[in-house]
Image (cartoon, rainbow, N blue to C red; front, side, top):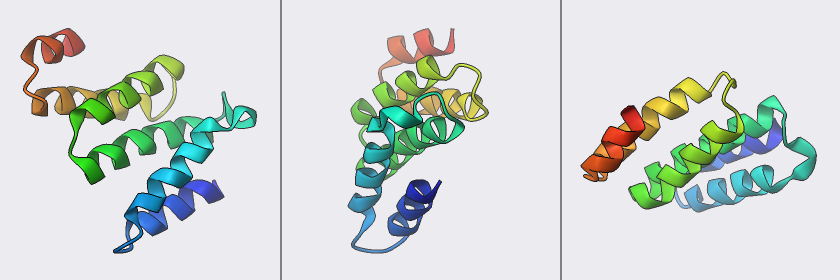
Length: 102
């Protein structure tokens, strides 16, 4: 929980946004948190922050897909799926967008 709160705080601060991705990547890499609610939240936020900071769908799409595959019943999975759909549409990769939505 603390790592997510730190990531959110530094993401909102000018000049430290990149550090948010570092905190989230550390959380996602922790084996002791796998399977926990907070690990799922961390995976979702890593995908979300990655897209928000880079505007690069190629970075965010696999992160959303990984979160959805790892946590199909997580409370954030529905939101991750919605963002995955939007991100694939923004990527202008229409065949992939159609396959995601289908």
